[in-house]
Length: 229
Image 1 (cartoon, rainbow, N blue to C red):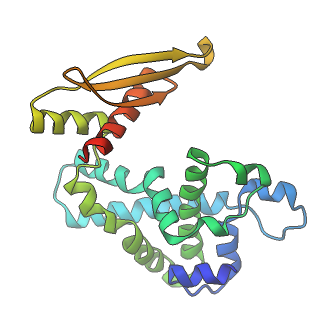
Image 2 (image 1 turned 120 degrees about the vertical axis):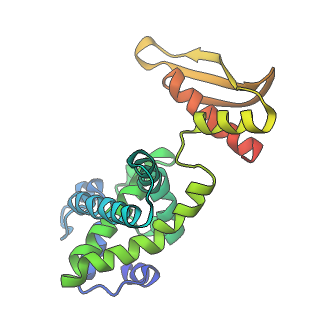
């Protein structure tokens, strides 16, 4: 029941339907015409703005760093991958309402839904808690999102994987990584690339993508995991 999730989130909702709506994907309405609530896209729109404001306000008030650094830190905190991870940790996935087709999707598609759900939940909290909406949403964001900041800064997770791997590999082994295209496939309008990342002539990891750049990023991300960096 949705009340179980509210308890996990630590929020006493005045209108529990707002939380239910926050977990309702547009596709669910196509298969359930008599469903009484709307889908979550408007709540997601609102929650996205609240999330960005809370994080921006916190960074501004607590760090004297230049704008560029603060922007990178904020992006690392509120990107889809991070929000999906947080949603997963909170157990949101089992409460999502979606079509049978959407329910079969995994991987990036599911991560996207989980990230959107986090924003929708934030919007629902903001609306539900009346005159204390902003403070309630802020507390929720601080407890679940901003707590990730020390780890992001310490491990430089705000840098893109290619930059991170290059910096660490130069520091640890004195080598600049090299990328090589290992495989290309698919028609011109839908190319697929597999790229290998090397230190000297040692293949560290591979990455796939619809462009060479995407494949390189994915290879660097995989290499960071392989090396434990």
